[in-house]
Amino acid sequence: METPAHHILVCASFRVTGTPQGACHKKQSTSLLQYLEEGLQERGLTDVMISTTGCLKVCDRGPAMIVYPEGHWYGKLTEDAIDTILDALAEGKTADEFILH
Image (cartoon, rainbow, N blue to C red; front, side, top):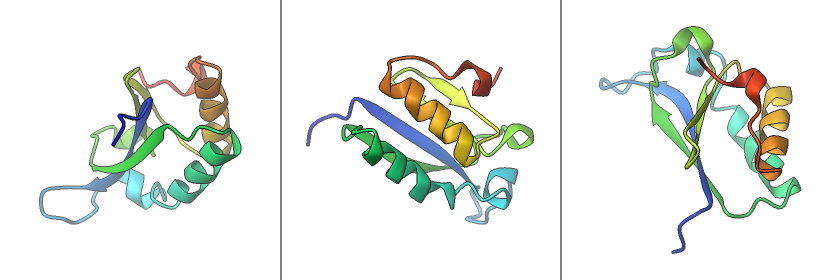
């Protein structure tokens, strides 16, 4: 297996007990996964892997995701935000308006 150019980690809010407790899951972060997959395909970004994670502990700013190797943390995800983030990724840029500080 080749190493992907990018790895996107999407918060699914799961904690040690296995129960989704954070805000990302409650804000439908996992339902955005399909939209994210389709967006990657539409842009020809075939060398990107997507994974869900446990709680990223940024509940007040979720749904959240991290893009590696850049290490960019993005929050307040919506379909429009994902479009902006993926457009920036395709151009080798950062979607600054969604970066978590």
